[in-house]
Length: 263
Image 1 (cartoon, rainbow, N blue to C red):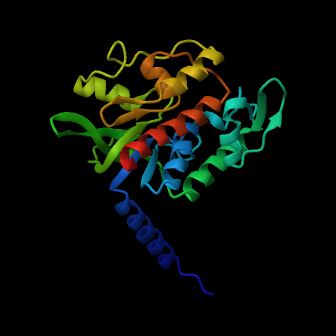
Image 2: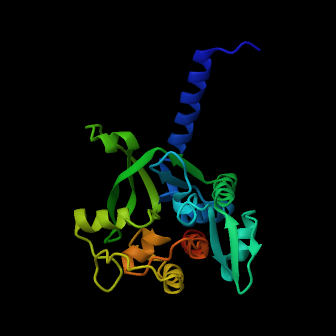
């Protein structure tokens, strides 16, 4: 077979255009391809919902790749073991309810399972804004405004494109970018005690892991939070290189949204 360079380029442009066009109106648009959102994407895909994850960086996986202080091992607690095993992540039982795992393998497993379940990850794409609409007298987040990551990082004056979604999920980790954006630009009040993005507290793994799961919910009509974005939005502690809460948070978000859309 003789390869033609122009044919290669044409096929890439055609294939991506078809993929992107099909994603402009989806059930769920998630921002940030960290472990929580990729877990959510896996379960949303299994449920037959159309879901896309917008990731501004080249590689999905969030903070999982580096483990603890670039030792590419991390910890999982007993509660999250069934999810990890469903994802194909191999665990080493360290007794007392603690398990360790290779973070490179784990991130790879999450990417693979999420995509194979039917969800799509768009890397190198930045969610620079949200779509706001009023439905039945209620203002809600109803989609995302997208641009290429280099466009936003370089400050280029290039207009974005929009993506409609029944629900948006902020899984951007420590910054809680989407929550911060809507409170700053729209002056909306989040579903917490202050109405604002509270910010995360210092590290406390036991409290932080529980806080993440408890506060994975709809923080504003149409907008859910997962993972560390939940801790930031509601003012919970960070938890360091333990990832059970991330997996449990993603599954909870997916199950809640599935119940809303298919219940």
